[in-house]
Length: 163
Image (cartoon, rainbow, N blue to C red; front, side):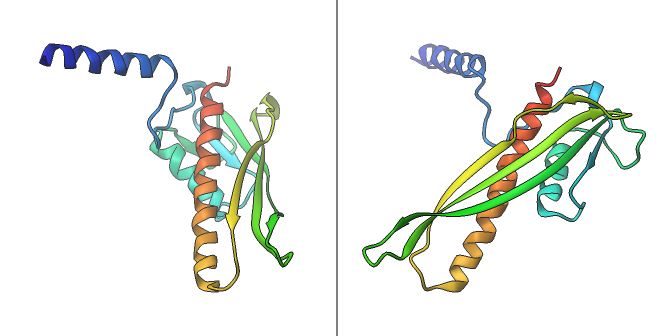
C-alpha cells in the first residue's frame, strides 16, 4: 500500500508542476538579463514600493540604486477607486468595491521600452455596515497590505515571463 501512496504523491506533484501551479508566496525571479534592476516612479517609502522591494529581494533579484542598472522597472501609477457596490433597505451603502490599478513599464537604459503591458488590476469587495470605526480602519490597512502583496507578486511573475 505504501508504494501506491508514493506513486500517487509523485503523480500529483508532477501534474501540479506541469499546470503552472505555484504555492502561495512562491516568487519566480526575473531573468539574469534584467539584473541589476532599478526601481523608479513612486517614492521609495511608498507602502507598495516597500512590498515590491522585499519580494524582489526574497526572489534573489539584485536591485540597483544608480542609473547603471541593466533594466529599470518604472511604476507609473498606483490608483485606488472606491465605488458603492450594494445598499441596504434604507438606501445606505453597506458594500464597497475597491479597484486598485497599477500601471508600469520595463525599460532598458537609455529609455528603450522592453515591456509595456496592460495595467494590473485588483478588486476587493468590502462589507461596511457602519459603526466600529477602529475595526474598519484596521481592516482597511490589512486589506491594502494584502492588495500590495498580490500586485507585487503578479508584477514579478510578469517580469519573469518577459523576453
